[in-house]
Length: 300
View 1 (cartoon, rainbow, N blue to C red):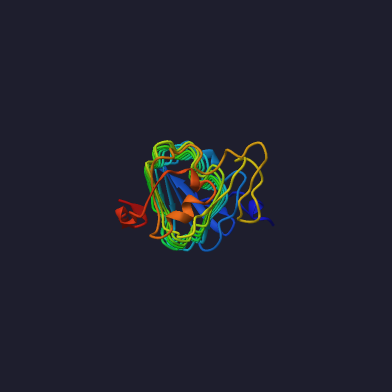
View 2 (tube, rainbow, N blue to C red; view 1 turned 90 degrees about the vertical axis):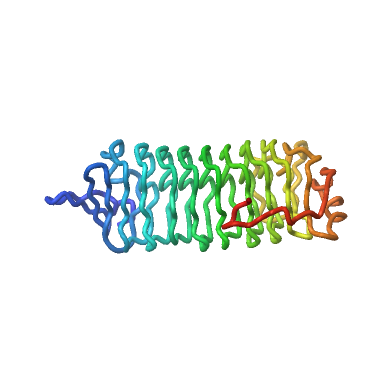
């Protein structure tokens, strides 16, 4: 039996329903999911008939994951309680939950593709430090998100993870991150400051597309990160090298960023940046990296 099939509802006389190895009940706006083990993945969740009335979701301790599409489209959802037993949040798990304003993720290690895409009410997300993977488009189009704390152990910011977060004003990229994929922060229209950690070595096409308000970039890597050049909808290269597509070489991670803004780099590396592809377009390099204050993974 597949996990999707296992998600079919089994009604019980006491109002408690089965979903895979777990149980669920809905009362007075609250959906409570109980039990031990793995939540199934869904095409349509068994509580879908209550979707317009669910305002609170309580996942009890002992459940190990949030299944794919488990709570997608719950437009009235205002509050979600996630226990520390949850190790993964599936694809599309909370997509389109427009009423959510904040979420605390206590110990989850992985967050799936499109997990919170379109949660336009979200203003903040509190990640645990040990998150190792955040899926593509996971927080795309969360247009009221004003701050994010990128987890310490994250190594790759995937394609379009924060695309369309138009009220985000600053981004702190921790030192473990080595790759920022294409369109990762595209259309973050109010983004003003970028801090690139010392291991960032690759930045994909369109990573900061349409971020016209950026007024400072700080890059802590003494070796200039390689910038992917080409179309932002072309297949992703398997190698983290400079990619050039004939006829469209003008597009890169920094296409829409003014080239006269301050770019702060490590002492002794200005010459390397001035001679590196794409970085060479910037005209105002300095070594003033200490303007950044680090607080829980955010810029102050």
